[in-house]
Length: 154
Image 1 (tube, rainbow, N blue to C red):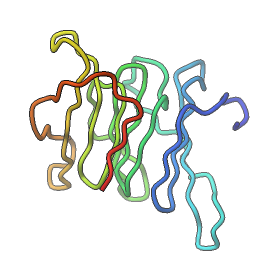
Image 2: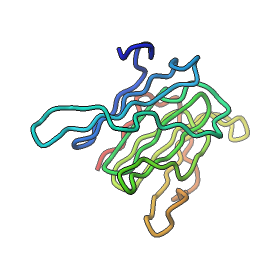
Image 3: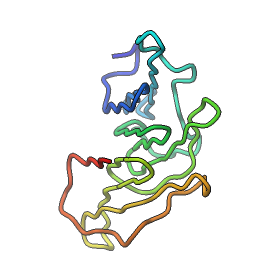
Image 4: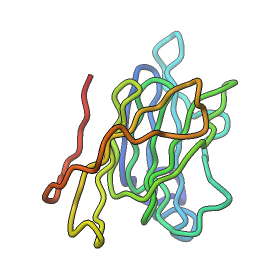
C-alpha cells in the first residue's frame, strides 16, 4: 500500500514494467503507479507515476490494468483506456466501453456487458502503430457469459 492510495485493485507485469492500479485513490478518481526494473534488478517508481486522462468523467481509474510491452489498458468504472509508451512517457490514444481488458502483442480483448446485444460479449481489437490513435475491431462481438478472469496470451 502506497501512502494515501488505499489498497491496490489490480497489478500487471510485462518485462521490466509493472502497473499497479489504485481505484479508490484521489477521492475514488483512481490512480495507476508505474514501476520499472533497472539494470541492477531494483524496482523503482516511474518519474511520472500517475497516468490520468483529464477527460475521465467516471471514477475508479486503475480498477483493472494490463500491459504487454509498450501497450497498456486501464479500466475505470465504465471504460477501458489504451496507452502506448512513446518518448519515455505513457500516452493515452483511445478509449472504449468495457469491463475487462487483456493484451498480447498487438491484439486486445475487451469484455463488456451490452443491453442492446443482450448480454456479455468479447470484442477483439488490433493495434497498428501506423494507425496510432485508435484500436480497430477485428471482427463482430462474440457473445459469451460472464468471463472472469480475462487473459489473452501470445
